Amino acid sequence: MSTVRRVFGGALFHVPHPHDSAAWLRDTHPHPRLLPATLVSGTGLFMLGVNTTGINTALRGMAEDLGMGTVALGWAVGVYMLTVAAMVVPGGRLGDILGQRVTIVTGSVVFAGGAVVVASADSELLLILGRILQGVGAAALMPSTMAVLRIVWPRERQGVALGLWGAVAGLAFAVGPLIGGAFTDGPSWRWLWWASALWALSVALLAGLALPGLPHGRKEHAVDVSGTLLLAFSLGALLVGLQQIPAWGLTSPATLTALSVAVGGLAMLVRVESRSAAPVLHLRLLKKPPLVAACLGTAVNTLFLIGFLYFFNLYAQSPETLAFSAVTASVALLPYGACVFAVSMAIGSLCDHVGYRWPVAAGIALTGAGSLWLSKVGAHSGYDAIWPGTLVLGVGVGTTLSAPSAAGLGALAGTHAGEASGIINVARYVTAALVVSVGTLGFLAAGSERLNSSLDEAGTPRPGNTAVDQLLSGASRPAEHLLDEPHGQALRQATADALSHGFASVMFWLGVLALIATPLWLVLMGPSRGRRPH
Image (cartoon, rainbow, N blue to C red; front, side):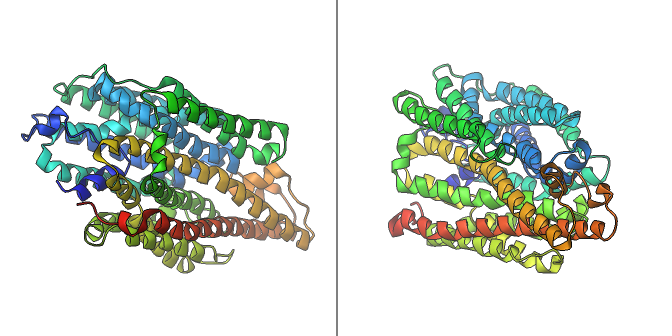
C-alpha cells in the first residue's frame, strides 16, 4: 500500500496507525472474520457520521419542542464535540487494553444509552447530559471502527480497507442532514435518536456475535488518567465560559472565573504531559511545522464542515427567511454534500502527483471565498443567491477534509504517526465545539443588534434578551408575541433581518479566518514539506 493512500485513509478521522512491527501487519492472509468485521466497522462509523451532521437539521424542531434558545442549542452540539475531543485518544488506547470487540460493544451500548436520554428528554439539561454520554460512547467506538479493519485486512489490501472506511464516513456526513430532516419533518426530531439507539444496540449485538476471533487486549498499554481529566476539565471550563457569555456577560465574575480556570488547567496539562511516560497528547511534536500546519488546515476545514451546517439551518428553516422545512433544508445542502464527497475522494490522486502544499492552500482559499459569498445574503435572498456559494464552499471543504492531516502525518516519521494523529484529532473536535459556541456569540450579537435597531426604526417595543434568543433559534415565532399590526409586521421583518444578518456575520468572519490561514499554511508547509511522500 502506498504511503499516500495510508496517510489519507488514517487522516480522515485521525485514527492512529499501528507500528509496522505489529504482528497483524506481517500477516498477508485475509482474516476469517474479514467480512463481519468490515460490516461492524461500517455500520458503527455510519451511525457516528449521521449523528454528527444529522442534528443540524433537527435544531429547529428541538428548539420548538423544548423552548431552547441559541445558547442551549450551542450546548447540545458543542458539548458532544468537546467530550469526544477529550476522550477519543484514551478511547483508542482502551481498545488496545480491552480488545476491539469489547470496546466496540461497550462504546455502542454507552452511545445507545445517551441517545435514549436525548430522545426522551423533557428539558435542556437532560438533552445536554445525553449528548455528553453519547460523546463518551463515540470516543470509544470511533478508533475501533478503523482498528478492526487494520486487524482483519491483509497488508497489501489495507488501501482498499481505508478507502472503504473513508467512503462510508463521507457518505454518512453527506446524508446525515437528510436523515435528520426526514425524522424532524416526519414523526419527530426525537426519532433521530431513537433510531440511533436501536442502530447502536444492533452494532453492539453484531460485534458481540461476529468478532469473537479478534485479538484480546494487551495490558502493557496505559491510559493517561491525569492528562485525560485535565484536558476534559480545561476544555469544559472553556466551553462554559464562552457559551454563557450571553447570560453572564463578558466581564462578569462567573465568566472570568471559568476562562481563568480553563487557562490554568491547560497550563497544568502542558506541564503534566511533558513529564508523563505515556501522555494523552504528545505536545512535543508541535515543534514540528508540518504538524502545526496539519492542525491549522484541519481546524479550518472543521469551521465549515460543522459551522456552516449549524448556522445555515438556523437561518434557512425560519419561516421569516427561506421558510425551508427540515427536509427541504437538507435537500438544499445536497449539492454542497456532493461536492464534499466527490472532491474528498479525488484529492488523493491530485496530491499524489503534485504534493499537498498548493492543493490544500487552494482548498482553504476556496472555503474562504465560498463563505464570503454566503456573507452577502439578506432577508429577501432566495436559494438562487445561496447555492453557488455552497458549491464553492463544498469544493474547499472536500479538498481539506483529510489532505491537511495526511500532509502532516506523511511529513513525520512513521513511529510518530499515532502520536501526531491524536493531536490532530483533538484539534478537529475542539474546533468543532468552539465554532458552535463562539459562532453562536457572533450570531446572537449580530442578530440581536439588527433586530433591536429595526424595531427602534419602526417604533416597536424591544423584546427581552431571552425572547430575542428564542426568536433567533426558532423556539418562538413573532406571531406568538401577540402584537397588533403594524407592530407584528415590524417584528416579523426585524426577525428576518436579524437571522440573515446573524448568518451573514458568522460566514463573513469564518471566511476572513480562512483567508488568513491560507498564507500561514503555505509558510508552515514550505516548498519541501508539501511534497508527496515517497
